[in-house]
Amino acid sequence: MSLALPWAVISFPVPLSPPPLPSKETISTATSNLQALPRSCSPIPGTRRGRMKPLGAVLLAAGLLGMAALGEQPPRPEEPSRTCFFQMLDSMDRDFCRGDLEVIYPEVGDVGCMYVPKCHQYRRRISREWGSPRVRYPQAEKGADLRTGDIKGRVLTDYVRPTPPPRSGYHRYQLRLYEQPAQVAIALSPQEWVSLGAWAMESFVKQFRLGSPVASTQFLTKYYED
Image: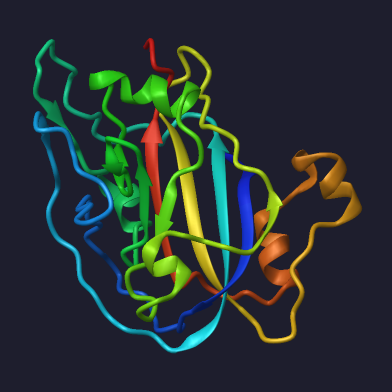
């Protein structure tokens, strides 16, 4: 059983709309005008674009404590090569990725729906060096902060780097984008401010009537020396 802890909670006004999510979605690692992948890296192609109606949004990010599901096909073995392979998630983990939500780190680009590779010290840099990723939702209307990844709004919890413990296998780090109901102020309870361990995503979503995510994605990584 996995325990979800908040990674970052952001409330901001952006143009969105809540269409039903498709059963499966191919998440792109295309970084186009935002990031350039190293020449030795092989990106995963494919994404789609669209326009959506203006509303508000809430971005929830959570790390799931515990190993990734047993029985899932492991990523391709790391080889001492200058070529860096990006492998998409398998089985149910891939089904979680819906709506073209992008999570962009420096150099590596969009890690949505991927295993973070060990090459170029990407796992170590995500855990020890890089700050919060740029989060983009290309289906937001043109000019929206979320479309460009330049998000402005009220941050309820600061970003915390993914830090899987040694010899604990792969851990999931998930981001979910919700439509914020009109006239609803998003806030944490006093208990949640004291200890993030008191935060429960299901209760939070129900309390503020957020409904189903407009988009969601995740990436898997493990301790950088394993």
